[in-house]
Length: 67
Image (cartoon, rainbow, N blue to C red; front, side, top):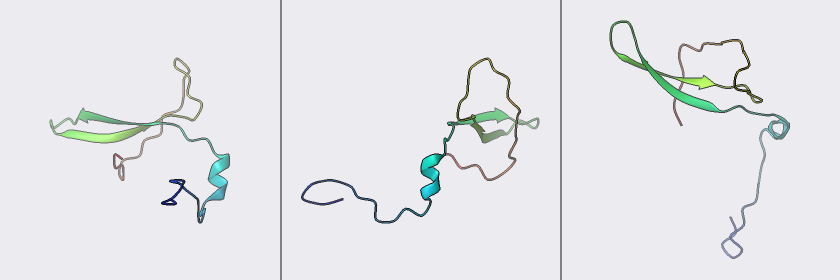
């Protein structure tokens, strides 16, 4: 960010191909395991998600960090 103009400028774009991609939203969810402890994870929506439309479910069992 320039101090005078308060404008931001990209100095280096390490993944320029990302500008051509669509990303879906991610929602943090929690649930109770069978032994009673609380488990957390992320629900990843497709980029063009439509309510009521059926989608395949993909489960990632580790590595989710909210934020």
